[in-house]
Image (cartoon, rainbow, N blue to C red):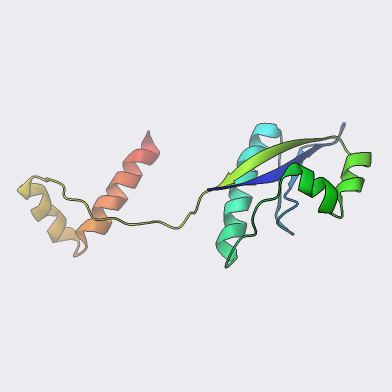
Length: 131
């Protein structure tokens, strides 16, 4: 897991909160409020990371203040909050497990599909979404 500094900008009188990641050029997001902006920032960071071969190492806030070319503009002109957003890979990592299933269920699954694992994973995902 990597945590990146995100700047959450709120401009009085305007709708929404903008988000920028100084370490990740072009990685921006927004939301109607801070909660929505924070969720959108996670998604933007994950999508950005999935499109890159490698991510740069996150900088500290002190390093960003000293090195980021837009810091002075942000620091002098805008109202913003600094937060950290964690990146977790969206790529699934499969692992083999031994589970016990009633034979009758396995027979029913086999009549429907040739890929038991995919069928079971899809059923689990549907059930979890319903919670």
